Image (cartoon, rainbow, N blue to C red):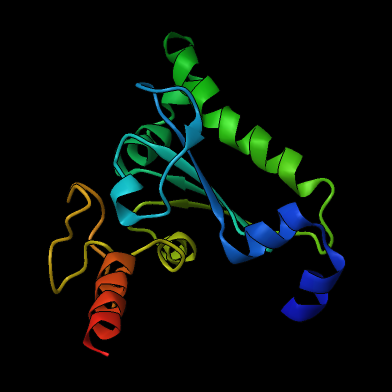
Length: 161
């Protein structure tokens, strides 16, 4: 299935299939790309993950709580409403020209649908060890090693032989 689409799509879409893009929306910074790493997950951020076949809008813990309390419906919090609408509009724009139509997932931190994002990010902080990428992100329950650990292992193997 994936091979067919790799052979028929252009370079940009092929790159997304191999290396997904992750955009962050927050009050502190303008929307922009962030590392595909658990250190990018924070309670006051909205993340937009584009894997070509899936588009995930991930709300951090604080944002999800504000959304649950319907702050976006209060005129005093118009900027919060704009922050919520920006990734949704971007996601709709991304889905328009895709075939097959991607699965859209709208999820919250620690929610069951968060697995769509957590399965794609680099597990630099796991339940086994705290990562060196900043340490302020989500802790991922996985047996996978981080990309940095994998690269260090490859370097050791190269030097030994």
